[in-house]
Length: 311
Image (cartoon, rainbow, N blue to C red):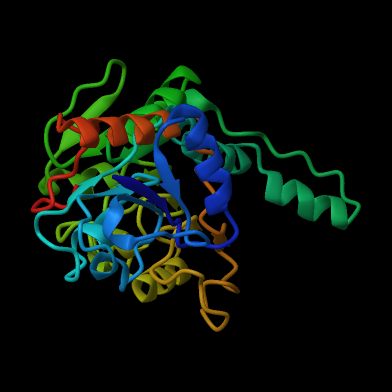
């Protein structure tokens, strides 16, 4: 049984770096990278960020695709991936904390009027503006799973009013939790900042179209670090022109890298970051190593995905 590391993305940790780290955890394991692939028939586990289209058929004895992250929609819906191949994702603390920090950074930028102060400095203008108070600011968190829970609790602990939303009922101490599609428009209308960390499913793709964008509070900020297909980008640009919402901060977009000609780059009410909100794996490689052991032993996997549901 061999484990192949093939991240499939540029500009992040490389395959050799991840393989070296895993070898310290699995000193007796057969761990490979594309530079030294060996016999593909021996590969039973593939660890990826993005699954290349030709890979499922390239490993005839593949049993598990381990996502080096949380979102698995492109893997579970890959028509080339045989039905018997299992899929697992990660739920590490480090990137969850980093994503929560990304949301906090941009909310605080608005709370403390940093853009206005930067502009005033360039004009050499001493122009005090009162910061917004946390306890009078409502932050909505859409998606109350592992990452969303981190995010909601971080804002709660800093004194913000936090409203959470999920598809099914959830309960988090000190957070006003809502669930179900019918509750979402009213919730959005009360939020000054909306932090979206939803998976990509048939129910969420294009969820933020004209109607839901119009339900947001005028001047509010929509922040998305979940999946880019959550937002109808043409509808978002039109909504921003009307001021509802007032701003969008996007770490994910429908097509990545964002094409050079996309109007999102230049819209004055849009901030783009290049999918960097959760960067470091931290202790997540412990779970990758553990899933290799469990796959070898034939026991239950950590964080296995229901391929029918997509998460």
